[in-house]
Length: 221
Image (cartoon, rainbow, N blue to C red; front, top):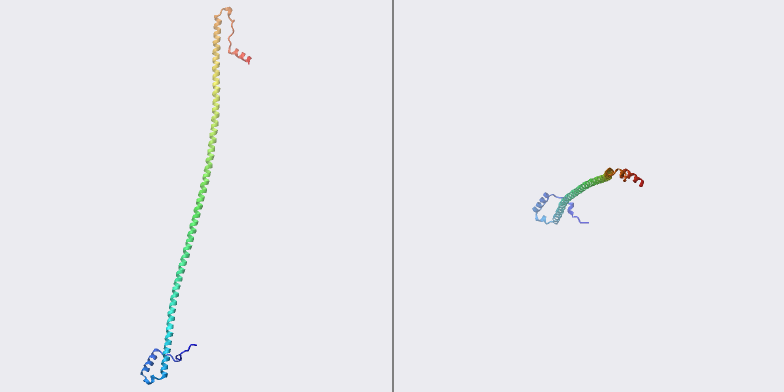
């Protein structure tokens, strides 16, 4: 164990008593100062004083260490608070960024859905218009075809009627021409009958009339 000086047994003296003791020692005769026990006491007192000084120094150093520790702890708390604040801001920024990204994605999805519905609607309307156009074109073609058929039938009917009229006209022309020829022959025959002597009349052949030709034609057929 560490040897403890004997001065710890002595009562501690305050600074005033120490000053008085030193002053009394200086006033004592030289013979008393030179006594061994007094020198030993002074040495012990000096050792005690130095021990107290070291204790005070240690206490002062401990206080300074405590101050430094407190300052370090305060700085650490400030740094920790700053880090926590930065972390809180970072989390808030990340949360805000996530919310903003979610809103943007939602808006994009909604815009995409609207665009898709618009395209589907336009496609459906285009399909309906195309179907209506095709039906209209088919109806127009059917009407044109029907009109063309009616016109062709009317044309053919008019052509047949025209041909019949032409035939009737030609038949009428032929009939009238035949009648004129018949009348001319009859007139010629009568003229010859009148100009011939009485005994020679009715001697010639009777001119053929349309009626006689009709009978002959009927017999021949």
